[in-house]
Image 1 (cartoon, rainbow, N blue to C red):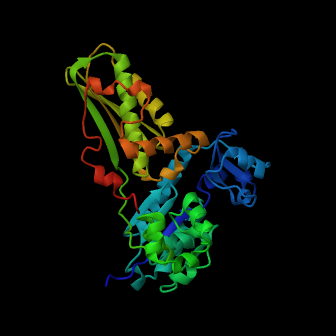
Image 2 (cartoon, rainbow, N blue to C red; image 1 turned 30 degrees about the vertical axis):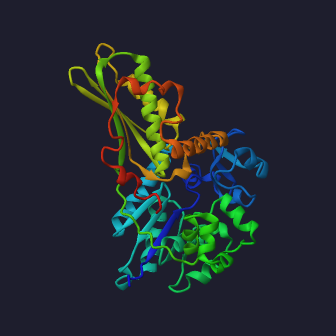
Length: 406
């Protein structure tokens, strides 16, 4: 029998709003929305004062403004958010033996064995208080034997609180909660289950596991186990400098700008899709050029965490324009995304519209079923004819996709 674990889920409360309040204390106590200030935008983050009116993250901004007309709307500062996220990451890195960063504001910490020496709840509580003291950011955590129960516990502890679920009480702890509380239960799944009278977790706990499989396929048993407080998924060690990249080497050196721009579009678009497929975001984009004389030059740019084409593509082309010496022919071009973190759900919430997010989901669904190249921009259609694309992961595909189900 494997030993029982001690897992902490820590979340920075209303992260973007909390960072804005550090810069503007007058926002404290007021309903605040961070996101695109347009009817077609979406809410990236909202204060708890706004949530009292029914506002939630990822909601269309038009709906949010209708629910809370007095809300203060801020465009957002991705640079400030990245800096604060990095500060918290360093604090956690220095104080725990094993942690996983799943998004810019969310962490899992494995304290298995630490309870014998320090007391896991005491250690986690001290960590939470130290983060608040050093960064000024309110945060909450849940502690239990696995990721699922700890994440649910965190949600019950918010805002700025903590909760421990004692060993052996996982199932009754989850039982009275709505099925949407289970990580992985989305809108469609919840609608299907509720149409069958399954509204609370305790009802799902009583369903036969084979019925869940017939209803939801392979996802059904996973949700059934989570509903029963069972989740063996490990805390995966987090490494900051993960990356994915792709290159094209030309059969003949070229200065055909139209084809080069089309190639860069196709390459960047494919890498962005790989990010979304792997539930990853990038915050650093680099472009590489190798000239006919074999001289190689690279330029990179830090951006806000994203996996969106309409943010990534202009950045790639901007870097290429700044890097290219028009007097020389090009032998190779490459693109690299680095500083990856988990968090596909946060796809550029500052500038995205709901239509854009729906479009990405539809396009990615087609790609997943029929192949990466089945949907692309017209500008990238001719990319195949001018070069050979090397492995887009440089041998790192397992690194990128290893945490997809974490």
